[in-house]
Image (cartoon, rainbow, N blue to C red):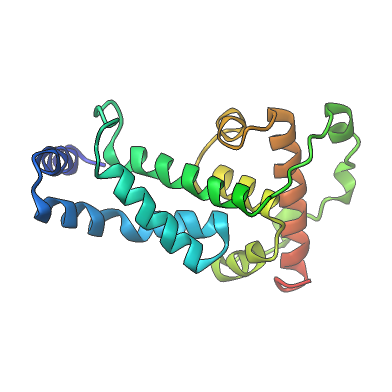
Length: 184
């Protein structure tokens, strides 16, 4: 984000803290689409993603915890991700803890050759829908949202080893789905 956009964003946040309704609307329109997409990639359900978006903006617009050490967008994304993970928890998503030794047992030769697969955005989205919730969540947070293993571990309350295993298994499953045309 360039300096001008950051200054405008800071000004909008300051106006929101002062109760300016128009500034709330501007911030909402600036971030709603990307935050909805972030949630949708995690929860894999439009209605749940819409609920997460609404709950996230309600929480964010209180602006109690925002201290401008990070950008408003990054802070809002963290709220969206956490609320999306909460939705998965309410659905009783089960993530099994896996020991490191099991991770080492996954053969590399079993992995499809990634360079021979021509990935298209639509095919990836279609295939991601069919992944189990744990794989989809870890892949979305790592690949699309830019979180590292330790951050995902903290967000999902699982060990970094489990995150790595979920990531690698999810990636293999995603590649297999893509080779089959996105569906199993």
